[in-house]
Length: 152
Image (cartoon, rainbow, N blue to C red; front, top):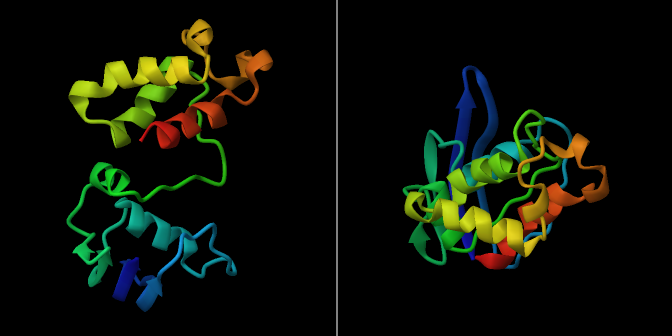
């Protein structure tokens, strides 16, 4: 369960979230709302990429805001992005390293990247540049991204 109490996020004079209070007792599959409603900002707050100026969030009764993004993932919070965020001028391996920077402790990153490549059967294309050069593996990014969730 996630308990959100009076969260406020400001970017200059803009308040995409203004004193939001909510209780999420079931897994959330998505957020729906008009542009500018604060959906992405809320996900960024829950993920640890944006810090609110006010309020608190509890995850299963424990404070969420002090946790790093990695600790939030380890606690069970997951997030996916609307668009694939692949750096086309990086290799498949290096794109996975970029993901690992956010979800795997530094001492385990090299092993975790190799395991993710093997898990999604992309070891043979690990040194190829971005998805545009891997036409035979068009879904490699979604598969690789999903491997972090299935392995954690």
